[in-house]
Image (cartoon, rainbow, N blue to C red):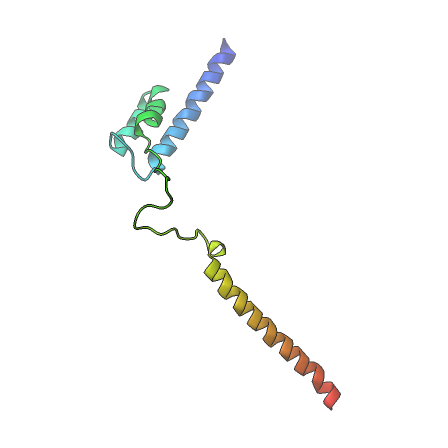
Length: 113
């Protein structure tokens, strides 16, 4: 009996923390203002976080058919952008060629002297 009480208390605590973090970090919430969801999560044990996840958490945006109309898909980082990688490749190749030419000139100097 004590073990089940401890397990339920731990589950309630985890739900409370996750519900509170979810309500405070969401860009927007549904059905009620954010402050009211935070109060519900804090003051209504067990059912407050469950209610937030069922009715307060924002619905995920549909991803059917690619990006939304009028929006172009942008790379998340420079490594995902093929144009950026292409310019890096040409800049790096140019620097490598210049460095190689400099080394060849330095190797030719002692032979000429």
